[in-house]
Image 1 (cartoon, rainbow, N blue to C red):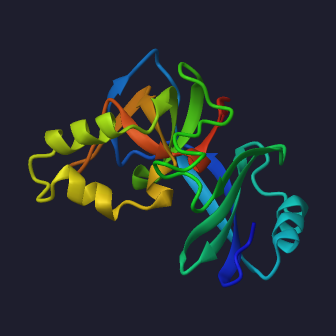
Image 2 (cartoon, rainbow, N blue to C red):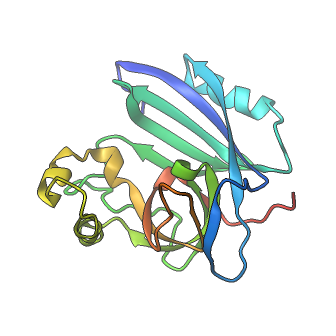
Length: 205
């Protein structure tokens, strides 16, 4: 699980908060709720058990709690990540060198199934958005994204060559709420890191 030269183990609490007014809603399928992201990094730990024990001992925002991530870094990159739900049930696991094309866990979905309604952490917007699962990452989807981006100076093959295992462990989702500001917007379909997806639930804030 943990490499010989790992840099450290980091723990994160993931909660939701009231939606911010810095974004405008450009679409909302069915009047869904969305929330701002409230994530708290608990700190660095020398051992995995130290991180899990600390998270289980902390009571933070129990009515707003989405879940937890524990990440082991190696060479300053994610090496091993486990996601837990709000009851500290393990729901997703990522291990480096297991998810790229030609490797056994390529296009891994785990508990996720097409059509599922989930909550996805959209870190570019510091938001937690309800989404529908479309399916696992695919080269067809990434090629279409590249072709739609007229400003990208690289070919798809150049982009693919620079991708590493972490980049391949993603899932295609359809955001049910789409946000925008003057610089960016949430697209109709997008890729989300698999460890950033949680079972759907609603929060009354």
